[in-house]
Amino acid sequence: MSEGSQFREHSLEVGRRVYIETYGCQMNLADTELLLGQFRRCGYEPVRDPAMADVILLNTCAIREHAEERVVGRLGDLYRYKARRPDLQLGIVGCMAQHVRDRLLERLPFVDFVVGPDAYRRLPEVLQESGRDPYIDVRLDRSETYADLEPHREAGVRAWVTIMRGCNKFCTFCVVPFVRGRERSVPAGVVLRQVQQLAEQGFREVVYLGQTVNAYHDGEVDFATLLRRTNEVPGLLRIRFTSPHPADMSEATLEAMATCAKVCPQVHLPVQSGSDHVLHRMARGYTVEQYLRLVEKLRNVRSDMALSTDIIVGFPGETEQDFEATLRLLREVKFDQAFMFQYSARSGTKAARWPETVSPEEKLRRLREVIALQEAIAHERNQAWVGKRVEVLVEGPARKKAGWTAGKTPQFKTCVFPAPQPPVPGSVVTVAVREANSHTLFGELAA
Ligand code: 5AD
Ligand code: SF4
Image (cartoon, rainbow, N blue to C red):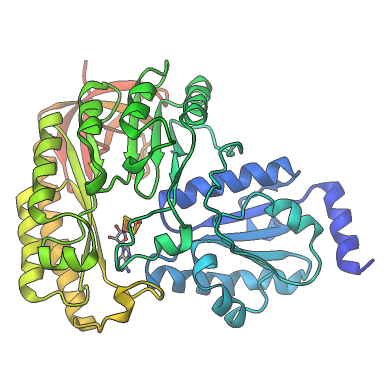
């Protein structure tokens, strides 16, 4: 028996500890909860300090180059724990593990394991057994939904529930279909049981997650039906979902949104560009006109609908006119919020084979311009709430203002208010909005 495994057996007796750091989207945060559930079942205790851990995992993102660079930098930092304690296992899971597995091991030879998003099921057991060789599992599995595995969630007000995984769309800029594989849905019965349990545990809101969440279909139940059934769950107050794809937004879903009182008037609907020429090259599957019609329908569902979006600037072939069309779209729709990115080529995608026609300086200029415009629009949208009353689902103390309480409105706007006797998290209070900036509503408890 090697020294390493003796140590591991010894540390098994005292209980092994796992530390996970999460990068990227909400799906990754939900996957971290899934991983923590698995590790706990195998006797590991989750810890918040990497210095205390026997296993350190980075749950990574590959969506843009910047995301990958951050992970590589962070791994360099974490290496010092391993340098001190060679038996510590340091690994990379998630989208970047899938995307750059070979390059990763070349660049970071001290990494003990590289595991993709479809191979989490046996990870903790494998780590307890493993010897000195790096463990690599990046097989994609068309049927893996982790439906039977229970995530480990911290108690709270809002729970994220992954209802579908993967993506079939292959937008030409996007690495997701390559790193997360094809679309598959968790059976509705499993989803609804989970939501019931969450409501019983005190969660008040669920956010359904999926790369194209409204493409959900388990073979029998579609997304609209799932929303309607979720609306019946006692104790649950609010339902959200992210991110829907404009091309999958069925009339049935719009209808369900209109009739289900718990479904919040808030949709994140990535548009990416305001130019048909660019949308076509991105293979988004809709035109600007079709997108605008969908926006109109959503606002007919609920006149107080809040909309947010994602924008990419500097896509290969994006001209100044295309870019101006994006600015026009933002002015026309007036999104409540937008996440704006410079295009970055991702290896394996179709667009990565096209020449980059927009210089880095020009991308940055365009990015700054959309951000400035959107900031002004968000400010204007939030001003419209001043003088109105909003129903706030209380989350806890405000981060930046001592003695203030924070929560979200149905539109998913952060609302803060002074409360000498703070209302309990999970309760709903009426707040009169007095002021607003582009990110936050400020108010006071209404009588
Ligand atoms: N470059 C820049 N932004 C990207 N996104 C996805 N892929 C890329 C890329 N290669 C953005 C899209 C997507 C969001 C999650 O990330 O706007 O909606
Ligand atoms: Fe990526 Fe397009 Fe799929 Fe969204 S719909 S995950 S942007 S390929």
